[in-house]
Amino acid sequence: MRVKVAIFLRYFTPAHFPSLTLSTYPVLLPRLIAPSYCPQVDAEAQQLVLRTTNKKYFRRWSVDALRRRGLALDATALQLAHEGTTLCIRYRKPLPEVEAEALREKELLEMLKVRDPGR
Image 1 (cartoon, helix red, strand yellow):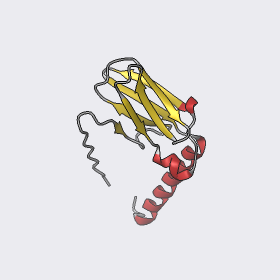
Image 2 (cartoon, one colour; image 1 turned 45 degrees about the vertical axis):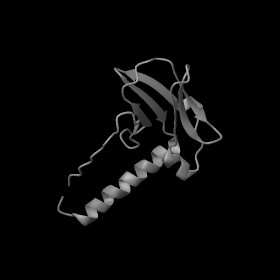
Image 3 (tube, one colour; image 1 turned 135 degrees about the horizontal axis):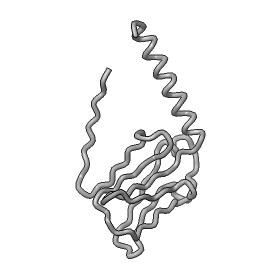
Image 4 (spheres, one colour; image 1 turned 180 degrees about the vertical axis):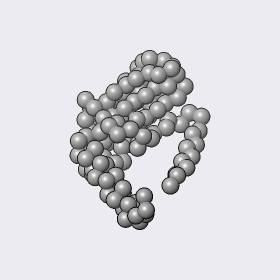
């Protein structure tokens, strides 16, 4: 069974792919070269915030999977990396979320085995 995924991005829209990694929620921001970025966690609004020191760029993201579970964001879980011209912000998933995803994947595999016993 193959699943095709199409992802369309506008020119300056940051891309947020919540399921690409097992341990982090990545936010990929293409075409950002300047190294003066400050990622933060807004504890009151439960959002990730990225701003520049010269106040020319400001963006907020919420991690919906954590919001649905009622888990609070932790400032120590933020990681910032620069890969070429892409700024990568990674938020490390908390342990309850990693365990829930593993359980969900296990249940999905069991459902596929029940549906197709010949494999």
